[in-house]
Each structure stands twice: as structure tokens, then as C-alpha cells.
Length: 217
Image 1 (spheres, rainbow, N blue to C red):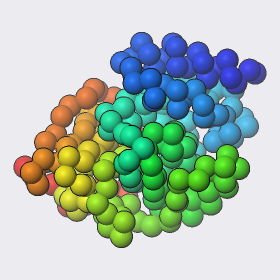
Image 2 (cartoon, rainbow, N blue to C red):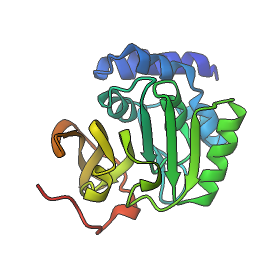
Image 3 (cartoon, helix red, strand yellow):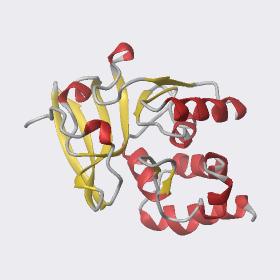
């Protein structure tokens, strides 16, 4: 299979028709070989508009959902982003084209090891990946200009929102189940958090966030 052609088709047939308009985001998705982040048996399907199972509990988000979440963060090379639930590392490499510093956190040691190996092979030098719990963010390097939670949560915990810089943004999907959710973006303004709806989507739940304390408005 010609993966470069499949990658171009993904951008032209999936991302552009679904409101991904930022040329820098589109170019990042063109540059990153999605096929190296999945099993060989999945590679021929890796550019379709579906979530791909990484292991029993984790998924590689479909390209449209991931691209629109990333686009909402309005990244640039002066910004530092925290990615919670960074999984196999595909999103981290996308983000490496768009932000100055990318910090990925995951609870799964194998995913951290595998993603670190892939990112090293791609000679990406502005990404750090750590194994840590994700339900409380990563205060050691806070504050962040942007935070991406790569999966669905019932509600974003206050402890994570408080790790944003002033005017910083957090993007994720909020939902009560894998079958129904809303992509949202939070923006910190004068120490308050403004929540904006982006679109409806179905994204697998990140179980690390289940039943944790949530932010109340």
C-alpha cells in the first residue's frame, strides 16, 4: 500500500471537508507516518476515519477528531503543551511540528517505551515522554500554554485546569460513555475557565479519569 498517497487522501478527504482549516495542522498530518504507530496488521487501515485499538483499553484517535482538537488549541512555536494519555505517541509527533515543547504523560509503561522508541527513530527533539498518573495532570512542569487530554473524560478536573497559563487552552472530549460525547475547549481568562463546545463525537473513555473530582462552575 502506498502510505504517502493514503496520507494525502486523509488530509484532502477527511480533514479539509471536516473544518480543519489551519494549514500548519494540515501540514503536520501530512508529514507524520501514521502507519508506524500501529501494528502491521492494522497498517492498511490506519488512515481511515476510525479509532484504532492500541491495546485493550487504549485507542489511537481518528484523524478528524485529533486534528480538530489540536486546531482549537491555536499552537505556535513559543508554546509548551502537555498531552495527557499520550498513548503510542502519534499525537506527540504531530504536536512537535506546532509547539516549541511537548510533554507527553501516560500511565502505561509499554506505551511510554514504545512511543519513546518511535519518536527517537524520527529524530524528534522537542518531545519528552514520562510514565506517570494522568488524572491530576503534571504539575512539575506547569503552567502550560495548552493541554490536550487524548481521550474522553466525564469532566475535566479542576487540578488540571489550574495548570494552564493565563489565556491557555485545554482541549478534550467530555462524555458519560464511549458512545456519546462533546469535544470542548477550555480557556483560562482572569483565573476563570470559559468552556466552549466544538462538536459531537464518540471517543473511548480514559479510565484513569473515571469518578475523579471534577470542576464545578
